[in-house]
Amino acid sequence: MEECIFCKIARGEMASDMLYSDDDVIAFRDINPQAPVHFLVLPREHIVSALDLTPDDAVLLSRIFEVINIVAEKEDIAESGMRVLTNVGRAAEQIVLHLHFHVLGGRRLHWPPG
Ligand code: 5GP
Ligand code: ZN
Image (cartoon, rainbow, N blue to C red):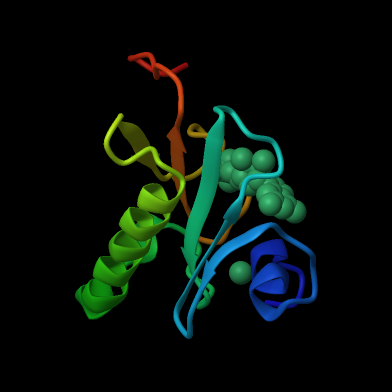
C-alpha cells in the first residue's frame, strides 16, 4: 500500500505528531483538529475500514482501544469525556482509506454530529 498516507506515517516516511507507537498500533495528532484534542489511532496493518474487520482482528481491536485509553489519559480528556468514532465509506466522508479511530475531546461535543 505504497500510496496510503497512513501507511507512510506508520513506516516513518511521512512526518506526524506521534503520541503512541508499538508493533501493532500507532496514534498521532490529526493535522486538521476539530477539537482542542483530536488524535487518530490506527493499526499499522493496512485495513481499509471497519467493514473489513473480522473476528481474527479481535485482539488488534482491543489493543486499539487500550491505546485510545492510554493516550486519552495522557491528553487529559478521559475523565471529562471524549468522542471515539470511525468513518466508513463515502457518505461518512471517509477520506483516508486506512482504518482509523478519531478521538476528540477538550470541549463540549454536540450531538447529533453534522
Ligand atoms: P477521515 O475523513 O478519513 O475519517 O479522516 C481522515 C483524517 O485524517 C482527517 O481528520 C484529516 O485531517 C487527517 N489527515 C489527513 N492527512 C493527514 C496527514 O498527513 N497527517 C495527519 N496527522 N492527519 C491527516
Ligand atoms: Zn494504509
